[in-house]
Length: 375
Image 1: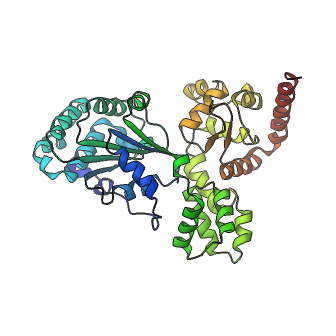
Image 2: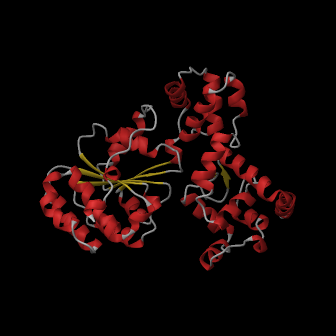
Image 3: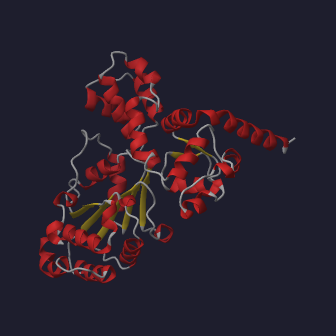
């Protein structure tokens, strides 16, 4: 197995663009590395990896980096990659770990116990980075990491980047003060950061009104700003391009379609498209718009999920960081990120344009009924 490991999965990735210094976030992340778990959890393209790289640069601890992919959920494969990442970061552990690297199959919990004992004997800190944890669908791996967090030696710090909350005991860690979280709202670029990023990527110096307008259009979404920079290079009219920037722009449309929408199961794609007609969403309103007879799904598992109340689905979408923005502290009302809503509405018209009027009528009927209860 060790001969088939891909070495580049154990290396921090190259930055995709010149990094914009974000000292306030670096300080928060580094402070979190004094505790057991730091979680960078945000939608696609929010700069999670870039922030992790900035924060670890010059941090002063060995870093074991593992970039995860769906196939890494197989227990022995995950264990071998994890062990190889730790050996690369801490070569003195190689003699003790080598027998495990050449063993198959492996008991993952037993492997974790061995690691805990080895790392507990170290004086120096080691940061274990698990990048793109959302790509795994592996309960045994979740169970083993939960065990590791419960028995974590003081020299080990865990940093996870993910597009959705990992199925780990986050509530327990949060209550104990052992969890540091940075999420999409934290990672949004400020106007000054957006202007700096555009300057790095294009050489353009945006005026304050231009920077404010672009930040508002993208809602500080890093990937949106990068894609806007590509469009700005091709345009002589900066003000016009910023004013017309939508989720239907070909660069943004393609990114959100490939990285976000098409990565969802068909029944979730359908829910997203049909509810995209709404400026604000709540469970009851979505229930009225997405009629039960429209909730088609292929597998029994998908059918069981989509037939849950829409409030359940909205909460799941929020946990999955699907560009859904909560509008109140009770998590009752939401809206879609403006660029994502643009994309969804365009896809709805293109794929099921004959249903749009009916969807609006259902929403209108719900509003009439809701208003009548207050009169």
